[in-house]
Image: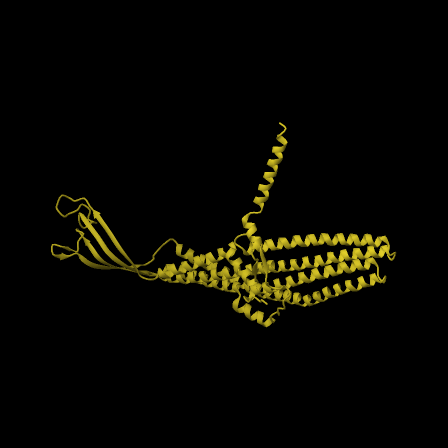
Length: 444
């Protein structure tokens, strides 16, 4: 019984060792030891396209629509089949004669090729409609791609901004510690009151908490981007693009020209109208005759052989069929009405898409222009905030300013730098939103 505590301690120690060993798995050890992936914005977009379920679903729809187009076109071409069958029929007691007049012999063997062609205006209109639907699906895949780009750009530069905020928060925390040390030295020299030390300590504690929050925000931003771009979880990467690299905003005329030529929403709406037009044509083709042609060559004989009694069993036949619609209780008229309703709705949606494009073009360009103009001012404010903090701290050392002025300068420097980082991200996202209209991604 006395050995029980010793054994318990041994088991607890062993379990702790196993837990720590499991926590540091080989995958984690290898990920931490390998060099980080250098991730450019273009690389992140390409990786996200492979990993995005929504974008891949749009590509799948486009692929299905393309195959529908192929099937509709091939339906207009002649088809060739090789038919083989044998028919066994009850006889009537007389050799070679059958009870059923529809059959030619007691044993009838059919082995022949068949060339079939059907000429139908509905099929032609259906092929054109399928082609337009394939173009619609392709345009929608492009819409999904451009929407994904905005998401990647926002997440990518959010990581860059969060990293800069961590550096700024660390600098502010160090500045808070230095100021706390300075107030302590001045208090011991009898130059300031103890209240200055208390205020400096409160400010230093705030800066440390802000640094912790900045680190947490940076971690979450990195994890969000990792989930977006990597097929397997991997947070061992570094960004290759600079958030503050200079990028010029395209002119308004250039953006309008690109939007008119390359906007996928307009393309999708236009192709939808074309598909609806062909749908009306296909429905109206129900009023017209259709022509079918079949050519057969091979064996249709009481024996499965090329010759019987010295005569050749190989032969051919041709059948031409003209189907003339007469009466179907208004079904064709109903289909025409239905197709016309779809066409009218497609035209209304096209008009709405065009108006939305004009409004979005003006709004998004104004957003990008405002962000670009404010970015210069935000950068200047950040520089002035840092310089103001330096000067006021020097004045405090010389007894020319109060602790409240120093604290206010510290808060101003931190706020202006954070606003500068957010302004840079806003400008990048505004450019990406313009790309959804123009199709041209602006990169450094």
